[in-house]
Image (cartoon, rainbow, N blue to C red):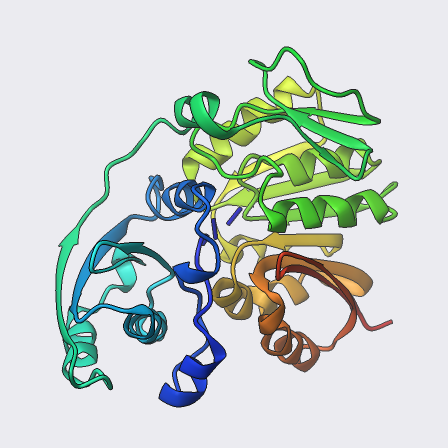
Length: 330
């Protein structure tokens, strides 16, 4: 899990139409505190991929201004946005940050009556495990068949599949719609004897469930060394010996043998950029499950997938978040 790339939300369609900006995500669709944790995990607590936090102040500040600003920032590499007083905090990989492009964006901002200023900082790390244990991470049951809990939970339901994790600074406990939807797909899928790839593995709960569901071998990859280390801890906690956790991105897939099943719970932009690498690791009949985006993003995801020879199978929706399944042509 790699957005909470992770947590971004969508501007209104009228904003998209009126200002002709790309559909990206903004904060207005979900104001639950869990979203803040999601952003912090993916975009801040990353040892191998550093981010800048750019705080925009807008005068005047309203929903249209923040929607348009977030959309335009998405076009120059920003990945996630959180509302703040009189503006927006936006997150961008340091390696992709182009301040000249940002200055040009402000100069060309289509709402000419709006004054924009910004400041740049490098966010501090937090102890994710402590934050979740204190406030958020409670046991969760998926489909009445899978329970996810941590070592500090004493009272939790019994289920067919019992996954224990310590989230530390890694995202993925099953609470977010994207993760729970993929878990639901894995509960319905035939994984027995199959090879599975979990891209953006976070805590590796998806990889762990795949193994419990009979997968022959599972590869879990994340760009965040905290995630990889946490994955290895969680794999050991569940007494699993057929999952390999690796540090890296889609470039690690070059030259690999094909997988029977690929899971990618990341975000819209990364999925569109990296999908070709997934397809290169698929054989006829391989299945690709993707999540980390809204139902409105399905056309863009589907267009890209079909251009790469994949066939759309179905999607699962929960609170406008979706998981989609594609199959490589036989």
